[in-house]
Image 1 (cartoon, one colour):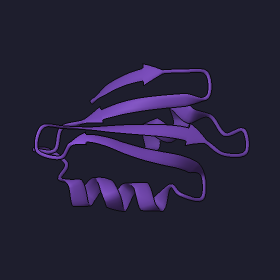
Image 2 (tube, one colour):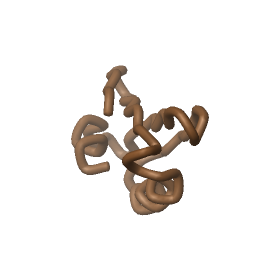
Image 3 (cartoon, helix red, strand yellow):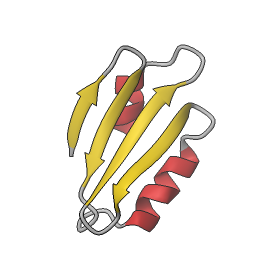
Length: 66
């Protein structure tokens, strides 16, 4: 996993060989009440997960929990 950080958003890169797309979808669903989740990339090579926190939550803490 690689992380890039913006002031209100953090991006995590997920290897789909370790965490399949269905697992990433399930995790994203669990975080929908705390953050906006955006998924991009090729599900066979690399999945980019962008997390933007809701209600002033810490995006780095949410990314660590993701």
